[in-house]
Length: 98
Image 1 (spheres, rainbow, N blue to C red):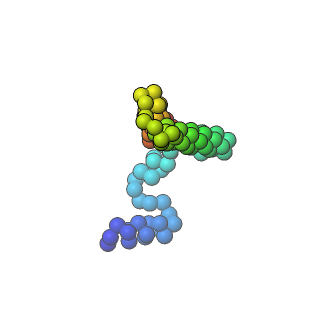
Image 2 (tube, rainbow, N blue to C red):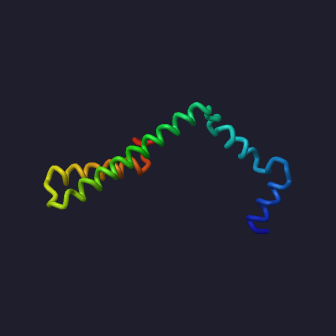
Image 3 (cartoon, helix red, strand yellow):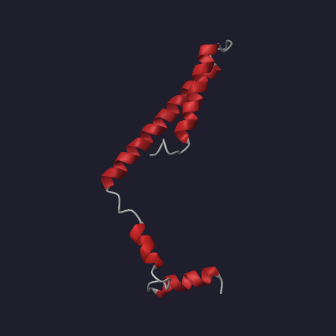
């Protein structure tokens, strides 16, 4: 019997899976339900991150495009800094959790 067939049989059986209490231990270790207020807070953090990312991308593009003239050191450094922030804000990490 394939894995899919075994899983389908267990799910359709309706009872608890025969796994010596493993499923119950895993469910007991899962975090409690998050309050809806915390979801709203996380939603606003994500929105502010997207706004910051958008502004950084716009600023970097503006600085890199310039006014048609050569790119001087301060503008180049600002553009690279904004690109670094853009990458930092868009890549999930332990310092940047939403």
